[in-house]
Length: 168
Image 1 (cartoon, rainbow, N blue to C red):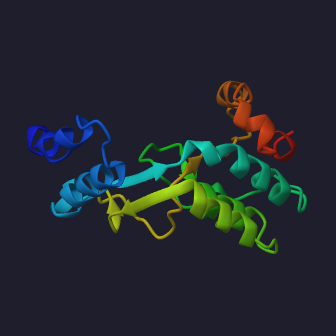
Image 2: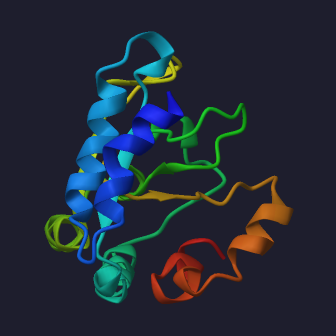
């Protein structure tokens, strides 16, 4: 299976100017055409030059109101992993559920500029449905995981995006 997948996009990657969207689409289509647990994929193509703008818009969005990490229902957010203790969540789904009354228009607009291509299969490893997918995932600090929370605080994104104000 890996050899077949590689044959789909490695030649494109070897080109002087590869079409990265074509590579992402090939990857997705390969998995989307499988069955059972093998029909499982999420992929996105991110314009990293837009990440600073996304961080700024995110910080503005997070300034909207208060957030209580102790009582927030992390299980209500679209998960993007299969671990018993969830670590990865859909970025936009988290923010919209954390701040349901906030206007997410500017955030959605910037996400559309940042995420150039995104696709997902209906389910992930037959574990759960994928109903929300913006193309980016995030970690939601967990009140009982000081080890991971401390590690997360080291990232520039934590500071510039406003997550540092969200999780004090």
